[in-house]
Amino acid sequence: MDELLTLDRLGPPWAVLETPDGITFNFPLNLLPEGVKEGDVLKFDIDIDREATEERIKDIQGLIDDLKNNDKGGDIQL
Image (tube, rainbow, N blue to C red; front, side, top):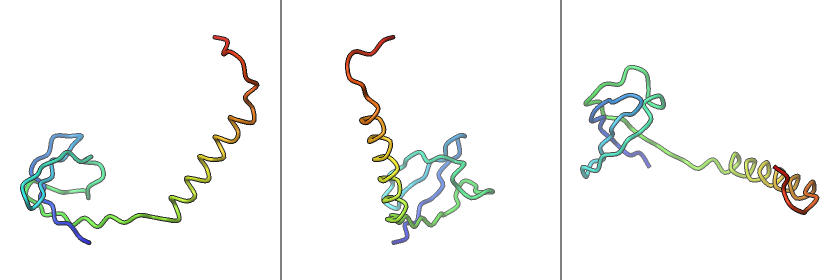
């Protein structure tokens, strides 16, 4: 589903985007196409990358498992 948003104003490092129903929100300017200007209408199409999500879950689970396996228990010495 494409969502059309209007670039309301620029206040680096943010762009203020406006939805068709008038809601505004900050969005990182560096994630927008180069050369955007106030008044431009931007088309957003956001999808979930299931494969990348599963890979990230596996990576994080591996880190958790490593921490659990290397924990000797007891108090932390500072």
